[in-house]
Image (cartoon, rainbow, N blue to C red; front, side, top):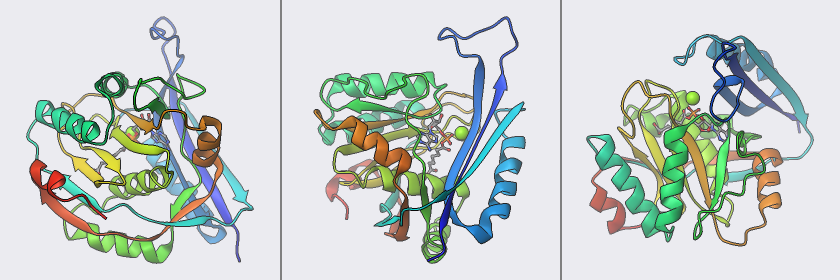
Length: 276
Ligand code: WAQ
Ligand code: MG
């Protein structure tokens, strides 16, 4: 079997000297990307990642770090989460829908409140790990968060995913990468849900993912122009956090099968019938 390579990109911009953030960060995270690819794709993907770092809506960068690492372990193969988009007009309605889904999954108001504060604040490079009952944060580095890596999609599954998404005109890199990430994260039993809002100022669609309801896209999660955004993974109380972090960062996982994409639904339709 030909080996896979884990390719990662991160791009940042130094802060102009006088204005360190409240939390003392010296650089602004602009963009990041990661994937698992066969070696014949290495050059194309690296070129694409560099392009992406250089032309980002969050602005100019002064450092781009690319890492390519051969992965010895054979990837786990998983199925992607089913996808739906919920109808919502404005941030107020969207946030309330996100709250309702999370709360139906058994996540306590305190944890939901804290998670929303994190994604509204933004500025992290990775995700927060939050316990579902107490809302305790478990990521080892609270400024950086946990960065999910070593994830990808097989070429044949990528074709299928593109086909099902294009019927609803959402066949974009952004959507595909987010579905792959959420599918890896939710393949772990101890993760109950993920909340995500993009940090790109011109991308306002977020999602809540869970095994119960699938990947629910929520448009208008934030006002256009806002650079806040982030991710929170809700974990059961008492989870083995180091083992989970190890899995998210290091275990290679490929999407090999694709679930349905059902287009736009009302909020009530989500709860009518749980998915999968
Ligand atoms: N692992 C963990 N956290 C990450 C990762 C990763 N690999 N990549 C990004 N994040 C966190 C980080 O805090 C970012 O600030 C935040 O997520 C948002 O990242 O179906 O584009 O790359 O239309 O801006 C959702 C797509 C797009 C919704 C999400 O996220 C849809 C997106 P971004
Ligand atoms: Mg972004």
